[in-house]
Image (cartoon, rainbow, N blue to C red; front, side, top):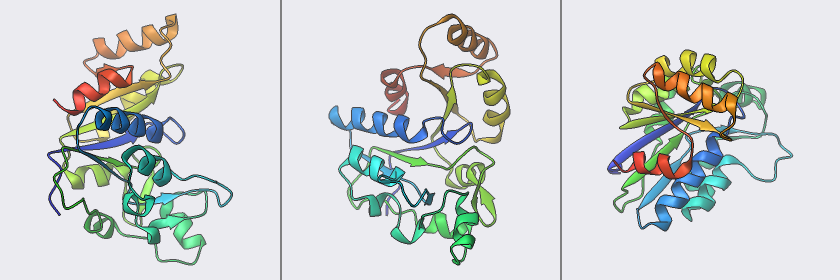
Length: 208
């Protein structure tokens, strides 16, 4: 399948920072504006009691079946890093090469394709690789690093951004414009990071 015209990898500074929400919001906004989009999550793990997975959310944003977002055999119903979850469930953990090979895009042209990783950049994603390794293997046109806007933002971005292939844009999630959030924003910008704080600004970067 043809590579999207613009391939974007979405990473996070850790688990629960909002990667899926940011990805879904950006894709929905692009799609509403007429851009042809697609979302992919090569592998996912989740609690067995979850009523909605990341693939469901991303599929909803792109009007795509969740099994196209993430191959059904890469769904692991155990809240652990995917290779650990697979092993716990008695399955062979995927290799990085397998996940890359399974990354299939629609037959029609895709203007923006977004690939969501798991956890933080160094979170195990495969038996032999992590989210940063996947990003490097895909050679994206852009990496979006989702980070918290409040306490810990500067440390998290400083540690995570260098592990990812350039160019990287930092998305400060839940940015409220308050003093702390604004200081974090200005500090990161002063250090040379490309930082955005709202989905509208992010989507403009995705189609540049």
